[in-house]
Length: 139
Image (cartoon, rainbow, N blue to C red; front, side):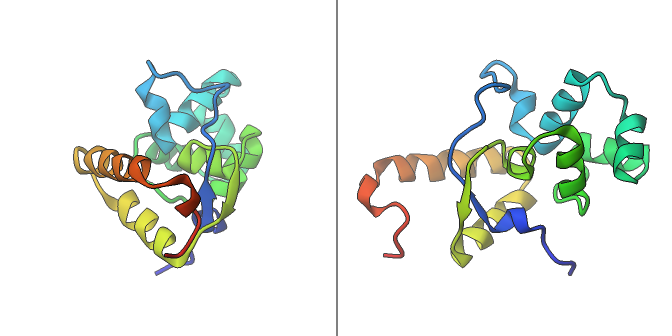
């Protein structure tokens, strides 16, 4: 198994609000965020691929959800002028994650719809019921 990008070891805390719209579900995926930012810049897949030293087919696979953890995530984010955490998870602010949280994030990233949405909904519901002082603690 290849090494995971460092961004998988980060906790996402605040959703990016300046480009996120509740009526644009495409921004809920890595591929959707990549496509939206690329188009915002007026770039083609080929142009972005040339900037990051890959092929247009790789960019297309990422945008179509066929590559959920691309090895070139850092280079793509830098080229697009966004944080890797926003591209991967849709958030701006990052902090350290526990090993349990990293394991959970990796497992979630492998899920397909509708399991991904259902799992996210369940976790968010449970998280909302937890006392705020318990966030960030191990017990």
